[in-house]
Length: 256
Image (cartoon, rainbow, N blue to C red; front, side, top):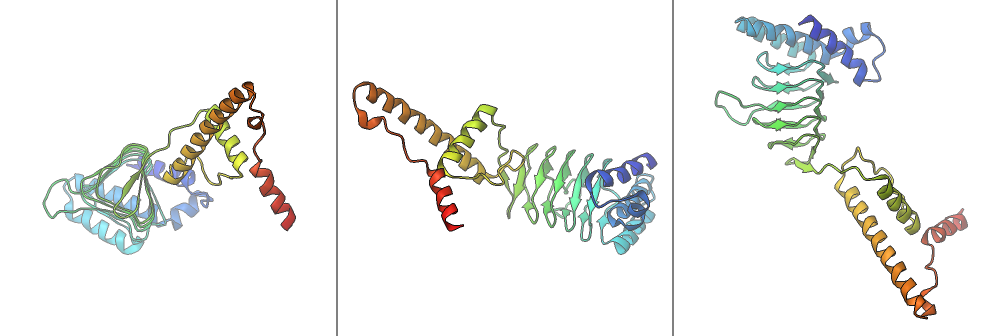
């Protein structure tokens, strides 16, 4: 138990850039306080001391604003940032290196006994205010967006957002050549792909990338057709198209 608590303290420094020293973390982080109370309450629960476990959990909620049932199973490296309003139910199972933000609920959808709370695999991140309800599984390194309500399983590495929670398809890593072509086409049409990264699997970004790929293919096909027509003597097909990027730059320079 004490080894696990040491890892809980260490993970605060790994995931919160505001953490300055161990003394500050031990005395001012309610998420860590609630987790330490839970570790003791869980030990009591597993050794048949049900009422002491529930009483420790009750007092922890009163002091920290975080409610963790002592019957829940939580792995090492668990981090609750800010913490107020977090609720974790009795049959919830949480893997290693999981992060929860304030207002998160890992709740149930049934009054029947048995497994009724979520299972979070290793590396999961649950955003502020999100609700994960029922005996669903959130896969490894998956993410749930802030204020989402998730009642269905989330695959490994995927992101769930919205109400009800919907899966945002993880973007496949593009090759260097594909990235180069996309950037060349974006430069040609005067488009800056601001905020589009592989770490943000946004469906709009995916659509824009598909458009850029399509435009590149069409552009290459037109070039080949123009070249073939030029070889046949059609001189009107050999001219260059206007450079939209330069036109936009000229307009910006004129306004400045």
